[in-house]
Image (cartoon, rainbow, N blue to C red; front, side, top):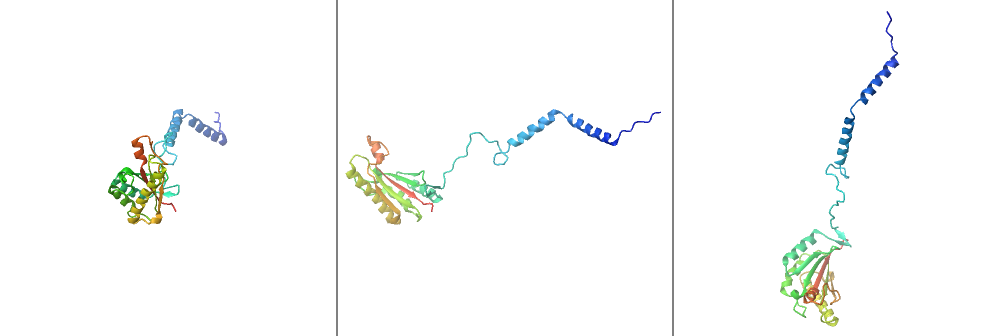
Length: 216
């Protein structure tokens, strides 16, 4: 009887390793594809900020917030509150926030003054009271008078200045320090509408008041 052949230990070990490689290579290719798909899906759920959520939408942009400081002017919560209070006071005053963070009031002079005169009508006083009420010491006020072009510069220039000064004096009488107030009269040099129509001329006859709070 022939004795069975005994393979060397190194050959047996190498055969085992070969068997394991063969076993691994026989796994279905589908499993690898499934794993790849799963990893790609998990990667797509993570935004550029590193948080789980919806994938980024191409072209989408976050809404831009208006900066608190623009052109050296700071916009604070007190400005928002004053804008709301002046709006509630009425009197036909348009109240807006400018691009450079000033609070702008536009007063149509046909409602604020008698024709050719500079005395403030009672209807305007509640809005001016809200301008003066509890005003922060850092806030500066510019008052600019405008007219239409119908009477010429010799009349319009002084009239626009007189009306702006009347607004200044009212604010001073209600507690605003005079040194914080700048007054200008620009006559008909800066129209906002055509002077060819009565509606346009009425729009041009106005007082603009700007409140600004320096950032430093």
